[in-house]
Image (tube, rainbow, N blue to C red):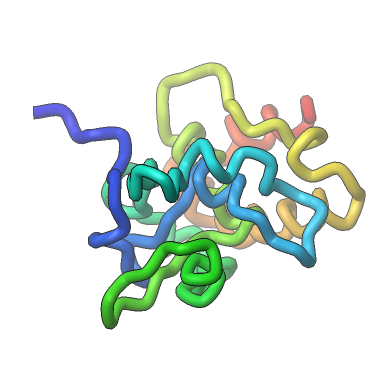
Length: 158
């Protein structure tokens, strides 16, 4: 049976299975110039349905690439937006970790196209550098898996 692409609630969210991918990229971060433009596409408060991808379930477990860098507790931020989880802490990738997770997922695939838009999603040199810093953490693992050249070739085109 094919793995579903999303979870439609937050019941399986944990530190290990944090929200990542485009739902995390589009989570508003008031201190950041990245992401946040399509939050309601992933968190529909009116229906109570979320549409999220979880690390280690819908996405590869990238702990071996990045450790816990960029995985943050968003329980309070989600509660302020009307999303509660009884007695449960909710974790999400920050924008850099979410993009890095997406890039590793692509690098491990057979696809020729990566859907991360570095210039659009990380508009300032500082934003882009933070992404590159987290990607640097994953380079040894990508090299070990024979996928570093693929990622580096794509990065050089950005």
